[in-house]
Length: 179
Image (tube, rainbow, N blue to C red; front, side):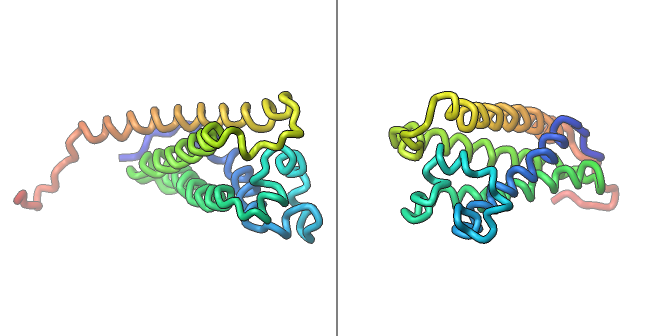
């Protein structure tokens, strides 16, 4: 059975993949991607994130703050699953496509939730004290709301599809035996 196609889910995965890969590669390429690094030109847009979120900063790198690199590896897994969803929906349709999208969006949802909760429980330990609220709102709060919202919607939509497919028995092969 061909999977249901949701253009908005595929677009979300395709639009966010380069953003996620850019972010993950910044973290995994440190210190070369940081200020003063030979590859900094590719990550020039991270100046603001280095100021707002200490885990992206030179200080976070030298303090060996482990959450950002761990999240970066998770980002790679999530993006692989998300793109596998797009591939198995649009290029080579497979009935397992919703599982890939559900798993990828679930990982993103969990990781983003943990990122926000860690910030809450550590008393905003990863935010620089130099930030203005409008910067925090624009570069930290708003993006997290967008990620949490879209991933929640994807998990709900694909979860319902998976649940629905489990409630419909698969056609039995006439030659197979039931044990």
